[in-house]
Amino acid sequence: MEEINKDIPTDEPVAETSVNTVPADVNPDIQATGEVPAPKKKKKKKKKLPPKVIVVENLGVRFRIQEQKVDSLKEYFVRLVKRKLNYKEFWALREVNLSIRKGDRVGILGLNGAGKSTLLKCIAGVLKPTEGSVTVKGNIVPLLELGAGFDKDYTGAENIFFYGSMLGYSKAFIKERFNEIVEFSELGSFINVPVKNYSSGMKARLGFSIATIVEPEILILDEVLSVGDAKFRKKSAKKLTKMMKKGVTVLFVSHSSSQVLENCNKAIILEHGHVIASGKAEKICAQYEEMIGVKDTD
Image (cartoon, rainbow, N blue to C red; front, side, top):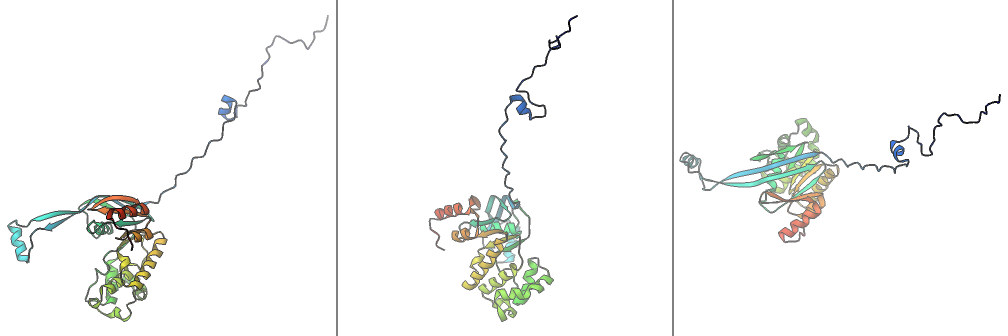
């Protein structure tokens, strides 16, 4: 019997192979198309903004102005009983909305009566708003009316403790920094003289020296770069600049757009108690100069 040739194929089906076959553990996109996909672009991470430290929402401040002059307390009560006290309402601020982030230096521009100082007083907690709210995160040093809290019958030295306590400083802290305050104020022997004998410039110098003895998180300035003589102005400006460079959040009221440009990165314009513009300092200062119609030369 002839031997069967082993090379003759049997009836068993033979598995077909393909050149496009891709291993199962390869990327499914390659399995589907047989092509290697282009590398995916990495999404750029959004820069994280600093936290908001001051938020002003729908702020309004209303004052009641008496229409008739009342010369005595007796006349006041007589008019009050007879209901003859007539008042006129005046809104110093209305529907003001503002958000300031940590490290921002915001200049506040506007003509007299625009509501600049009123806004700062609300943020500093000196004035309670009629409507709306102010939220502040961080310790504030307000340089508003320097020396306004002094007792005129106390000496400069006594007012350092008195005024310092009003700003929230402890007695131990004031004692520790007493000589530094006196030295910066340049009052010398006048530190032991009653404040009623001080000039307005001397009061401002002492007030500035007390208020800036700490490094705040939020600094509020109301035209304080013009206090004292030329020498002290230069000295105080240098100290404020040093504080700003450390990342202190600043609110700065000024009539001078050049001062705002020099010290601030953002600005707003107030007009009749409303915020009419806000943004980068360069743009807002240019708008303010155009608004007042006079090129600032300060």
